[in-house]
Length: 108
Image (cartoon, rainbow, N blue to C red):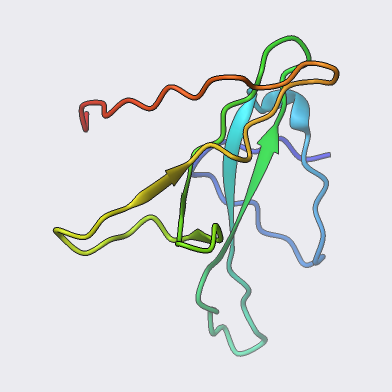
């Protein structure tokens, strides 16, 4: 298993890696993959988010979605409305999320 650290690339020749999830705190974690061909050319990056749940507390997940509820990149044009969604938040059964508290926080 591989322990990931934010910002540190794990480079290998195999296409799969097993992540040591014990080092990941509950919440959303974003991974990036770039592949390199035998000529040394790099691909454009692709991204994947995983959610690590907490066994005793609910896990909050915040997304930007379009009018159809599909997740989209969190980039918007100035002056345009944005839909924030906590729909992927969860609790361990039989518990359930009953309230969503959205707050605009300082950028720092």
